[in-house]
Figure (cartoon, helix red, strand yellow):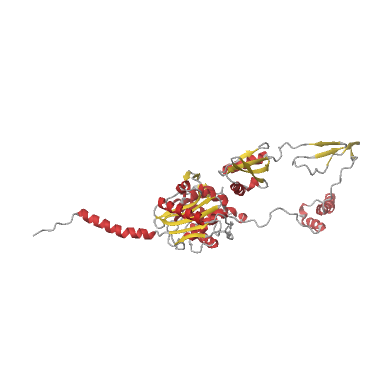
Length: 494
């Protein structure tokens, strides 16, 4: 009679492991379903769609909305790039990926934007939301309101960073719509998403999307995302010639598999998209300011009317004089002869001055051929009076005087407005013109009123701003350099 030996313990462990794989692997696959969407960015036309309206976990694609609202807040004066934001304990405690911010630390708003866009830092994203709305929950509600205004009908946000949370869901279609709005609504900030690395204040950070940016021709953004529940997500944009394609993938199984699939979808988009399509930018949503901002103030709300001072209307000068006399404190008024003298000044000098101030100034009297004379200690001398500035002169410091038959002219030594700045050389006129527009929007203070000019060179097209003084050109270059933008002064002989 044979005796059955007991099964070794290791076989039991193998059996348990096999059962675990049979159960867990299907569940893992179900937790990150696949979805894809491809559109022609110029027109918004759909070129490919698969499960595009299925509500899924967006992961860090969420930060596109966080950044979109940050750009909107800067544009509308809620906050500035240089505003120092105090980091809360909640923001500092966010799990990786993170910048490593400390509770109580203060950091410029611009560095939070860079860290969220390039590093996909969760602590920076939370700090942005708290800076604009006071709490992450209030900011999430604003994110959802903005999503609805953009046409993202199946999206609900619960946080600013995209970590998995119940009810925090979006779709491939909605995220593509958001990516298109980021591209066209705020082109001056879009370059953030193509930076391979950037200075985030406390340290330099690398782009989470650098592999696709370096491997796919024409790729210039925009955002990656990953959580266990979401899988590997990506919204990517690429431009070739006059064509621009946006492709979105949800539920990739790895970074390399996701990037490969996105590259295939972009290739599909470029094949299906017509070479020439009229650009139809998406409509920018109506601005709805936040309700819980800790940085905005009444003074920083959008300016709807010019604040240039105007002349105060005065209907009757005599009435003003009478009110001044009545409002005078009797205890401080002079008495006797002094009182009579003061009353005389109010009733004559002030009245005449007010009436004269309200009258339309008369045209200046032309200088006569013979100069007028006056007397100083009984000796007649010629009167020196300024004459009208010639219309063909442009120097701001020029003044012309006439004394008898002699004319004295002081010429400007400022060098005129023959300087400019060059912001790069580009392979096509279109790219140079686009660079001029982007730069002008980013640095309106020093470039306002300048002449934008594209100059064709043997090796490309130069993008120039002309009609500046040497000092203003130098200031513009220093300010652009502070924004990590290229700039070179152009002299009169250039």
